[in-house]
Length: 187
Image 1: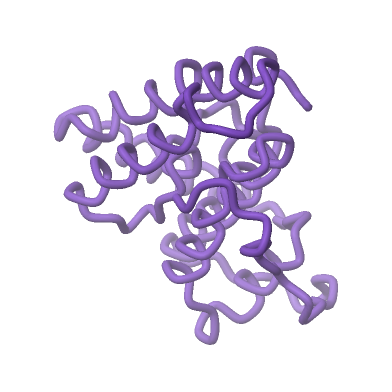
Image 2: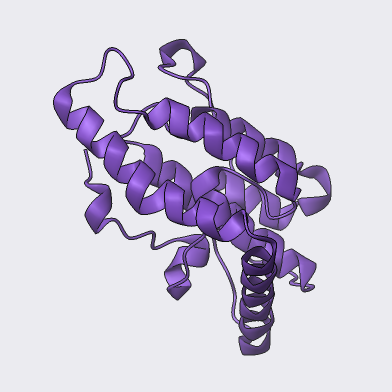
């Protein structure tokens, strides 16, 4: 299990040395401010060290996720001014990437699907589905955050008018499958 103290998200928004607070909280970039607190409370409850069935090492990792990732994300997104400034920074990132005119090829099949067929892809619903299982398996939490960050970056680029080149890799239809049967907590 990776230690969140040393984590680095090197996909999506994270690959540009930005923290993707929306991905950490399992929220789409389009989320209303009222959803931020509700989502935070669900995650905080899920990561609380008194959750039954977790080993001492899992409790330590859950506490680290809460203090190092979730709380800072909530602190930014829960304050209107901070959230507005953060959104402006993300928009500037999208504009800067568009100016570079570089080809963007996401790693995750689901992110490729969104990039190549954005009109047929429900971004908000997909983020919501991933968020349901985001912190259930703490060993996979950083991977879920990275996937969400890829989806968020694609959303930003598409909002800025990014058009994928026709030579983009083909997309597999086996996107994301949830592990609802192994739920420890429903976030």
